[in-house]
Length: 228
Ligand code: SF4
Image (cartoon, rainbow, N blue to C red; front, side, top):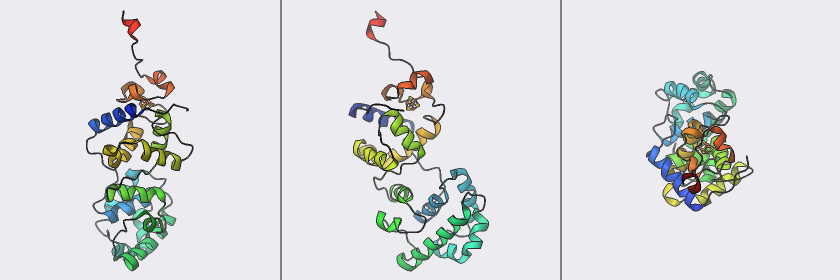
């Protein structure tokens, strides 16, 4: 999957199109406060957003603050999230995190990467999602979709997620940076999918540098000499 880097002009067009398609992109996790988002993202590791929403739709009406989840205890919390993968360790981490939030932050969510990453079960990716989605910081949480789209299209080529994250922050124009995370995830989830990308119906096919896109239906540009 080696593509060449997109030019500045390609990057600009790429995001203008994604913005036109989804002017106000949202995460597909249900949440109504930074706390609910943090817990949903913690639960979503190696699980689908749909499975997390099913659990939190029942949990949050009962408990949606650090103190109320603490009151449930580990076993009580498990009864709500046991349909989600890795629920045992996730329940332990959520309870430990809630305890810290109550003890150190009056139940609020800290707004710095350092403080977020110090919470049990919160890694760089979760911190990036919370900083970006709850607080509007220009951070980039690189998940499997963004890693694939970045490398495949030539938008942000990197051997690992950190390289792709740094490259994205560098190449994405300021006007797109806050929403870019969602546009890229949704594009990767619904169009630039892993096995059979829908290049034939892709709105950015003409600025994508993936050499195999024509085999997956992208229209070849017409050369002037072919017209005459
Ligand atoms: S043309 Fe194909 S590979 Fe390129 S962004 Fe679109 S779906 Fe992905």
